[in-house]
Image (tube, rainbow, N blue to C red; front, side, top):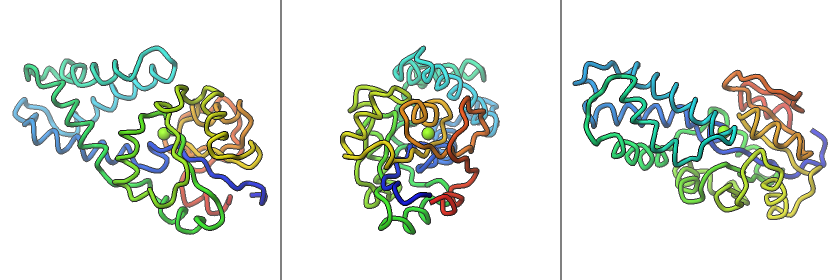
Length: 231
Ligand SMILES: [Mg+2]
């Protein structure tokens, strides 16, 4: 990459902090704690249905159709309904356990630690996340990311969310950088990549979910270690 890029702006969930793995591990914990197996449900099926419902809700959130509150209220009841699980009144309790247990998990996306270690003296690292300070800071600490990052900008604090240009403005203002000095690295083709593209900063699309991107990103990687070749 040309030497002018001084600031690497990372998305958090599934770009740095492995939401897929951490939520999988959390669902295993919940499956045991709430004895879901006693309802005749296989653990793999429980996780599969949660993913289906959770992903569909997050897609609707990304399109601006529902709020985060709706996701939190609806996902476990929807999982229970789909699997015909009868645990009266437990869905909201499970939701609370899911949130507190998951954010305290520490698994990072494969290759992230190597990239951070290798380039920490070359670039400044920042996080730009559609999330809330409180929850995201727990994940950042749990994952041991804190020492590497300069600014952490969340939609909760900015009052805007990716792909809205205002949140990129907010971030660059806080970082104190120009567009041409920054690159956005993220796994969401819409909020991270299209958002950064439309705002006018270069992008690295971490294409882990194999989702089509409407624009042609500056770079596409399948593995975080490929970032080593770009930087
Ligand atoms: Mg993400």
